[in-house]
Each structure stands twice: as C-alpha cells, then as structure tokens.
Length: 400
Image (tube, rainbow, N blue to C red; front, side, top):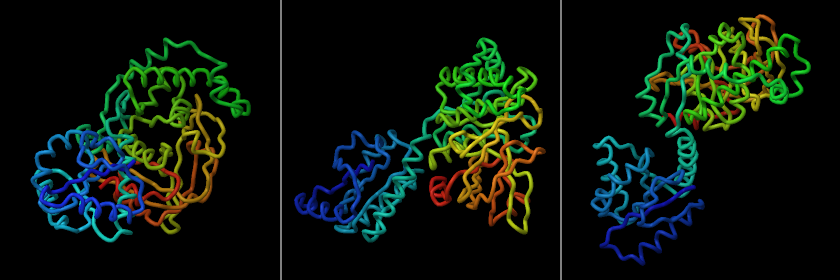
C-alpha cells in the first residue's frame, strides 16, 4: 500500500493547491491512500511518501522529523510536481536530511517517470518490510571451515533491521532428546517419495523428522523467522542430518540454512523477500570459464522450489537423509551478500539442466552465467543462493 502525506505552506491558497494536487496525482494512475497533513500513521504502509506541494515548507517539516524518523527505517521520499517552488523546497529538505545522516530521495520528473519510480519503490519497501525487525537464530556456531564467512551482527542490524540471536547447539540436542520419534508423522511429512527411498533412508526418516520438530520448538521459543544450523554436528551427536528439516522449514516460510553460514542466511532472507522462496543454498562444484557453465550442489533444498524430489543419504557421511531436488529449467539469479553487508554479488543466468551424479551433494544443477571470473578471483565465501527468475534489478535497488 502507498500512503501520501502532504506538506503545504500556509501562505498558499488551499483550494488552488488542492485542485492542483488532484490533477497531478490523477495523472500518475497509481493506487494510494491520501493521508494529508495527518502524520500519525506515518511509516505503517509499504511506501510512505511526503508530497511537497509548495515552497516555504522546509520549516513546516523540520519539527516533524524526529517523530517521523522514529517510526520507520524507510528513507524519506519527497514527491514534487515542481509547481509553486516545491522542487526548491524539496532540495533544501533533502540537503538537511543528508547533513543529519538521514537517507532520502526526491521523486520528480514527468508523469511516466514518477509512476514507474513510485511502483519500483513500493516493491523495494514492501520487500524490506518483510525482514526489517525480524529475529534470526544461529544454532551452534558457524562450521569451522567457514573461515571467510564471519558476520558483523551490528552492521547487519543497522542495514537490515535484523536481530541475530545465538543459540547453543546443546539446547537443540537437549530438545531433540526430549522428543519421541514419530514414524507416522515422518511418513506424512516426507510424502509418497519416501516409499521409493533406500531402506536405510526410510529408517532414518523418523530421526530426521524429530530434528525438524525440535527446530520448530526453538523457532517458537525464540520468536525466529529463520535460522542457520551447525548441521554437521548432528552427524556424530544423533547420527542423522538436518537436510529434511531445512527442506521442510524453508517450504513452510521460514529461512533455514546449513553449516551455520550467517551471510548465506541473510542472503536467503533478502532473496525470499523479493521472490517468495528461500532459494537454493549451494556451492559451486565445477566451473568452466570458457562456456560459463557452473555446477552447483548441496544436500537440501526447499521443497516448494522443486518440480520433484527424491530422498537419498547425506553425501559426505552416507547417513541420514539428503534431498535430490529437480528445479525448473530457465531464468535464475545467483546472489550473495557479505557478512558485514559491505559487498554483494548478483548475476542472472540460465538453469540448463539437473543432474544426479553419485560423487556430489544430492541436488545438482548446471547454470550458465556470463560472469564466472568472480568465483575464481574474488568470491564471497563458497555458498551462494540460487533464486528463480531474473531479479537482479530489484535486489540491487534493495541493497542500495
């Protein structure tokens, strides 16, 4: 939803300004709710716009700013038609905001440009609102091999509004031990695909489902929207894997990532806000710089991303449950942010094919990308997030 608030100098004739406002806003052809000079609900809509209708309004807005800025992390968007010195006033206001460390933008131009910009900003701010203020858990610490994937909790909170909560691995293990195995629940959760799985995978299903139930308990306890899990610890502690749990939870609307990879978790949260799915967390296994083909693989994938799936063991350990998902061929976007939000990689490409080689993690996809040098010269860790569709433009705008 778009809400428009107005800013008007008392020196101007109200009737004339109202008539000009109606004409200008009607020319944009957008759906909005007019709030006028009542700023009490400022910040509650997906996109909040201050329509600077006249000049001489700088002093009118200045005393309102402390209250408005306390209601939202959204930049201050100033709309102006350019009439009655409104553009000049908007420039003075934006300069003042910048001087005080507040981000903002003047929306100005012809009707078509303004309309397109407002609709784009609505998508950006709608996506941002989906993760601003959310809580994410780190269950256990990042895996020991993620030596380049540290995270700056403060930087993440300042730039996204996300709060990260550390949860000891021991708490998950205690929760798992307190839950009885539920074979019938496991069969229902796994679906008909479990019947075609190898016997050792069928035997592992109740234990894998118990991990899922334990994670749901921690999600509720800590009010989490998602988490990252030091999942390899489960191999030795409960002789099972978190692959099924993560596949189920991601398809239920949470974000759940592997190996305690916090940058991957943040990337998935942002990707989910844009696409509606968590994305496929995977690492490149082979790269052909000449053809641009990159093979990505991992042992779990959100079940709502795939056209079909099968169960197998976890690749590295040969135990528990892994997911071999088959993704739809076509347009994709590969995405990753750094742990301090200072860098990001976004590249659009094409998913050429799925494959099922026995010497790799179970879900395997071959992508064609125009930029493969990044992976070999300046990567952001090893895990990357594969999202459906072309969404580079929106992701870039969101990260600005």
